[in-house]
Length: 319
Image (cartoon, rainbow, N blue to C red):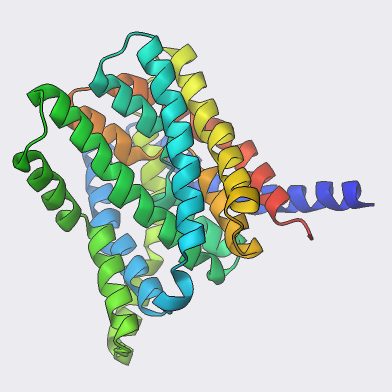
């Protein structure tokens, strides 16, 4: 009976995820046929990143109770599991003889999922609006800890030492990141009990509503310009992101640092997301293995059509 229920549940979840991946597919078609040029994709991505997604994150954060959302067991569980997989990918990369910069990029690919553009809008729909709090916490750890770490490792390896300049670069990057700023501003409004005026709230609703279709279309259009070179490495990194990462998070959240069941299920689902596009932006900016990252994003996104549905279906089963 449970087996039949599980299959039915996973099929239902799979059918619910199809529209999201359908939008990605539409964007891919538009990019592939050049109906949407790379320049157009870049501007759409910029609009989503700086305006639509920021409005969505701010509104979500402003309506959350920071004291209820914040959880040390949750943060420890996600951080421990992500650091473990990060270390595994790092070890494999060093064993293959890669440089520190290349190793940092591959480790980032192995653990950082598309939480902002794909996870936040999709999990809020599939798992309920209560999923927003845990997803925002996952996003915060990814950006603040691992987003800073990759810059420190790449820059430090090139300069041969740590310096205040490197830390200043990291600090500027965090301050300029609209996801972090909108999240911080939202939680600040929430903690100070600042109510958002009606017209402003409506404005944020309209602007934030563009985040889901815009982000998914932009993901697909950006994938059209990516190549699938070095498939063996891409498959390994995709396996790390889609299998090892959610598995490690499940062990950490359910066994080592027991997390409230619903929050744990959202964390595991977030960990199962494909490789984030911002890793490619970082790799391209520093000139470190951008094609390798590109291939991993392409492979992991294609495979995640099935794997994400399976993971969400599994964590959504009656306990």
